[in-house]
Structures are given as structure tokens and as C-alpha cells.
Length: 448
Image (spheres, rainbow, N blue to C red):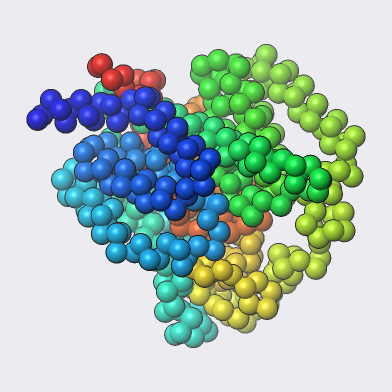
């Protein structure tokens, strides 16, 4: 029995298992089976939690599920009927952290998470109504972004212990790369299925574009890291990931992803002179294309019909002024994440908060000065951690964080507990790991 368990764990830690998960997720997308796909992936993750001591084996199935479920827009009523089945992953989660428990530990990023938790919990104090604060949606975001992230940090930090056979950072990078390939596949499959309609309309209107772009911006820096550590050819995958972001039709992805791409190119240029010229030529070719097709690009990415990427009439633009007004109404604590008084500008689907869609304005409008101080403290602490011992792997994690931070300027981003803020917390746990004299491989082989 012990031998069977050992071999099972080795297989789950191998590249072959990851490829099987990729193939299964791709099948789910092709047959439009996202609902049963989520249920089956929840079961797979539950099994992994029970069988495997190394919790990182659950990262890829989690990311694949988070990616294909993006297609299930406004599906609260679809999934809530399966709520009783949550006892399975909850039970597996509890079993894992009891059976494979390790001592709690804290690193430098922990205190910023605690500061934000205080601001999130106190948001709206002295202003928000009890009905709004205690609503199911409000409590989900308050708990998820507050005490939930504190608990997530403590639990995950205790689990991430370096192995003698593979590096946890390298495993995270490999998982991000595979997930990025899957996101690229998903947008490619959408185009194959809807090519005629897209070609005739000469516009892109994919509902899940912003969410997929946000995930892809987590993954985009990894090919550039591989271009330095493995083979220069990987740089083309970095540009492919950005092309996938552009093809979603996300305006935020186009602009903010472009900024992240420029940062990634700068990153590899510092460490590798030949790559400096390759990335320069690729970026120059892209800019020439944009210059020659400006009108087409504006039409494709304009949802307002006025040939402008941003319209002053859209809710996102108007929310900036509303956030300032909300801040002035309660400057210390803001109006809270559960405040429902802005539905005239943005009426969210069931289970979503009333977003301002811009992180700085979300902070001042929902959390006030307390939020400004908390997020400022967290931000500068994270930046110090990135540059504390700069190395290609540390800077790669920093670039992934830059991706979610940039996208949060035009979308909820870090105010979504799962998966975005959870991934941000994990990035800094991995930054806190020692990265000296560790193996560089990301997976075990089945026969080891």
C-alpha cells in the first residue's frame, strides 16, 4: 500500500499528469462542458489534497478550472444548486491541513495582508447600513479579502517547503506556463468556432475578455524567464501570450498588457544582449502594425461606437467621480465593499460587488484613508520584497505582480479574492522562499 501511494504521488508530481490535466481541460472547452468540468476538477483537486503531501500539485488544476469557468458568466444560480457537494472539497481541505500539518510561519509580506484585512473589515464604518454590510455578497468579499487572505497566507506558507528533488519556484513557473498555453488555446478555440461572425462584424466582443486577460498577465512573464534560463526561443511564447490577450478584445489587456510586455522585454534585455535586439524588433513590428491600422484597432476595441478606447459616457469613467464623492462622504472608512448605492452606474450580476473598476478609486471610495494607508503599506512592502535580492526568478514573480496590479487599474483585479488576490498572495509567499542551492527542475519523473 505504501508503495502504491508513493508511486501515485510521483505520478501526480510529474509532467505527464500535468499534460493529462491540460488535455482534459481542453476537451471541456471544446464540448462546452464547463459546468460538469468544474465539478470534476473539484473532485480531482479533492483527491490530490488527500493523497499528496505537496499542495503545489493542486495549483495547475485550480488554474485550469479558473480559466475555463470564465465562460460561465452570471452563473450563480447554475452553480448554487451544487452547494451541498462542497462538503467534498471542504472535507479534503480539512484533511490535508490536519494530516500534513506543518508549523505556521510568517514572512515580510504577511503584515501588509493584515493591514489590508483591517481596512477591508472596517470599510464603510459609520456609514454603511447593516443590511448592506451583512449581505451575502458583502460578507464574501470582506471575509475573502480580509481574514480569508490572512488564513490563506498562514496555511499556504506552512505548506511551501522546498524539496530535494525539485524547486517550488520552478514548479510555479511551469504551472503558470502551462496555464498560459491553455488560456491561449481557449481564445484560439473561440476564434475557430466564431471566425465567420467575428470576420463579418470586424469587432471583438467576448464577455470574458477582461478576466482571461487578467490571468494571462500573471502568466506572461514566465516565457521571458525561460528565454533566459532555458532557451531564447521561449521569448516568442511571451509575445504569443500577449497576442492572445489582444485577441480577447480587452481594452485593458491591450493597454496594460502592452505595458507589461514592455517591462518583460526590458527585463530580458538587461540579462541577455541578443534578446535585446529580438524583443526590440518584435516590438517595433507591432508598433508599425498599429500605426498602419489605427482606425481598425480603434474600431475593434471600441465598444462605444465612437472610435475611442475610452468614452466619457461609460460607467467606468463616471465611477471615478462617484468614488471621489463617496470618499468625501466618509473619508476615514469609505462606504464599504458592500455599499449598494451606486447601482445607477453599475448594476452587478448576482454574487458580484458594486465595482468602481479601478483600484485607486475602489480604495478611496470603499475604504477611505484607512484603505489608502493599508494598501500603500502593503504595496511598498511588496516592492521591497521583490528587489530585496533581485534575481531573474524574483523579478519574474515581480513582473507577474505588475500584471495584476496594472490590470487592477481598469478592472476589479485584486479586489476579487479568487483567483486574483489569492494568486498575488502566493506570488509573495514564493518570493519569501529561499532560492539558493535548489534544484532547477520543476517536476519529478514517474520512474524516479
